[in-house]
Image 1 (tube, helix red, strand yellow):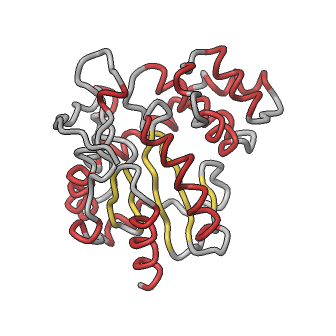
Image 2: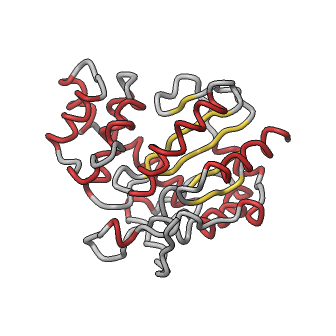
Length: 252
């Protein structure tokens, strides 16, 4: 897997994301490890204009064995059986939280190459639950795509929208207003008018901001970043890396 020799610094959280996120002192104390683990994954250039291909870094950024498990971080799993941005049993023994951006190339790689394998091997048999968190870090279109995904989820089509947005070549078409409508249609969102209303709603903005605040509070500076029962993992790692962490977590 290609390596990026650059060392992107962590971007400052937007002003709107700087309010304290109440996840508990113990969680905050353990959370810095996610920032370390995600240091070399896909992160935005601090300049206003982001070149995603240049900003995306190595997908082999973290060593799960070295990072270790932080049980305090397991509190971040929401385990809401009605969460449309999650898949798998709410009481699954292992929860993987994914912080990702629809404009992130490595997020797309994970979505296409690895996630389907995880679903087939672990979600389908009840071992794993995957909880998505919108973490838009590549500007206005990232924010719009995140709201679009949330809006699709309100009609039970989040994962279909997710697949369409991460399809090969989809990112290059952008995530402008008309394109988001096309993705919603492709995802089978039944009520187009409701989708458009939800897309620009205060509820959509608040939901995206909640996820974004959570990621910043954890020290995450790149996408994709993962927490697997409290163990941080960064980048579009090979299937073997996820298997190692998931099976270790399941044994506990």
